[in-house]
Length: 397
Image (tube, rainbow, N blue to C red):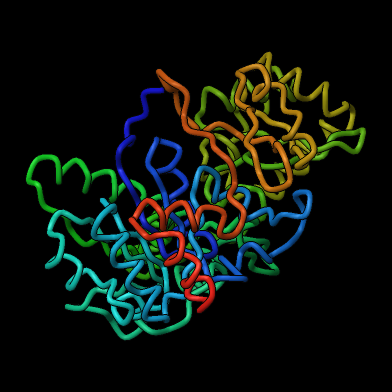
């Protein structure tokens, strides 16, 4: 299989979501990813739950196609193994340990770049960990919920009565995506210059970038967009509406042409399009309570399927409010062949192919058992059988 990152080796000191999400995508593209884990315990995300035949849902999602090497990185013997692995094998080092921890282990960019100038080092932290300008929050603990709060995301998410976090680890995902894209860019640049570089990814900065629309909406002290649940704060009608059979229809209008079509073909109330209360989006937002009542009363005479049929005929964007069970069976994902299987310590598991089109198959290898590849990697580095046994005896690995 032709994979764009085949031949690239990534050594990662990672846990939880942000770094594992970034490195899994590198593995999808063919990179060899060697995951350093604590002996006996491993990445603490392994213990989050047992929802996937005894395996943790977060871990299965973010760790396929990796090799697991267990090292007690505070042990002098294990530290030598890690340094040897990085200097002999690694193109990229990724870590999301506590700020300063990698440097204390001898894995900081300043030291590694002197030993191996072509090495790319990506540090992921909550608030940033650059030595020149670390900022006052450098050492503050940072979990996904906390970054959602600090970035302002929670303040514009939820209902008018209560703010809410996102249902997925959006701060971790944002940081992981920027780590992934920055590493790809650094690999391209290294191909041009021969030199590596340090990448400093902050979860706060990543999610604040994703939060830029409400930031600009509140420009120069203006009021921020209100929390409106699943509706849109600044476009209307846009969001969920109940149908007569108890179902819910999700719809969204984007322009005045669609507003006219919605009135004529969906509500079958063509005169409403010219109602002066609703002739522009900002007016409809201001009068959303009155307009919602009109829409709800019209939909009450129809089933959700009938409303969706009218919306389709009017070319108005709409969607079902699917449960997780619905998504597993989603006809579009199945029709496009987006599901495959990967192996795991508990046998084959379904896995969604990486988004995007591929001229060849992406790498979809197994979710590793804890320490599954330890002995093989040590042997590859030149350790003899007796030396490997000794490392096990001292619990360095």
